[in-house]
Length: 447
Image (cartoon, rainbow, N blue to C red; front, side, top):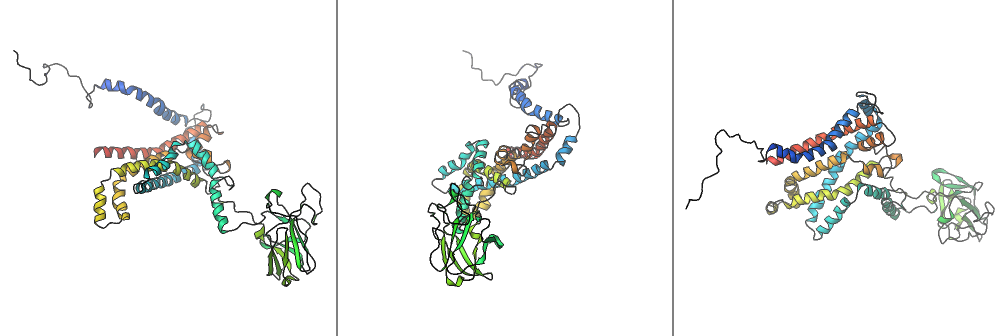
């Protein structure tokens, strides 16, 4: 019976050529064959568009005339492009910083609450919404009218809690009445008042629909004191006489009436439901003044989409969407932090802030770098939110490079030469961040 063969691998005879293999143990041509589909897609979807954009940026709007670097001169001399570069810089600095900070806070705090998983789900949910849908949502949130915009509805409610609005904003005296405009938006009578003569103070400019539901027929003053009526001098359906209390005309309740002598208020009263008021005898010989507080426009909230706040407002919408992304990545990194280090620090007397600042954050530094770099690349290409949220009047104030590229090339500018130059500029701005990220990944791989 033959003994079993226990020898090692068979050595090929001398002179037999060896087939070269790569570091993966696979023949190079086999590896190239498997990589070919990915390389074809990479070339078709990345390399070719980049090369074509660089070449196209050297031609005019029609693509037939070579203009060299003239398009780049146009880019850097255009105020709209310079505004876009400035806004992109604001985005790169502000948006990733705030988003990462919120993600870190959420990730740390949710570890300490029983309902942390539910909270993470709620914070992460906006990631499931497209940029288009988020833009539409926040365009409605930032509406100027408090009756439509949620943000201004909240702010106006808080403001009105501490500062009562005027009774009848926009009201003004009827032309030809005894009332005349005075300093600060108030109205003062030309004549003085005396007992037994009623002061009629007709106002216009108030829509019938805005009158209180409790408004009554304007009353005629009674009694021999110093009295008067403030009413809306408008008869529904037409007719009526100017300066006369006609049937159907409503009294204005809650209007402040002041008696003024030599610039000093000597008496004050508020009108009743039928618009009538009565002043004490000290008001004899005084002029009547309706202060501006009766007519000031209601607080309209914050102009979120105005020239000053449009970019911060859009960044707020972006943070709302991406804070969940940052939180999930940071929470995953936080799960790998050795708990014994945290407990040892607490045993040594460190408080929670010191543990967070000197142990948790340094250990999470690689994860935080991933989040920040990813968000920086993302915001350099921001387009959807700005295009949808910013209204036409302030779109130039919120301009970013991706939006400028679109508007120049396809959105009415029809100059793909300059648009291609903007795309090359955007690529050059993204490259440093990408190079930094690649180097960081390689350093992590060598550890």
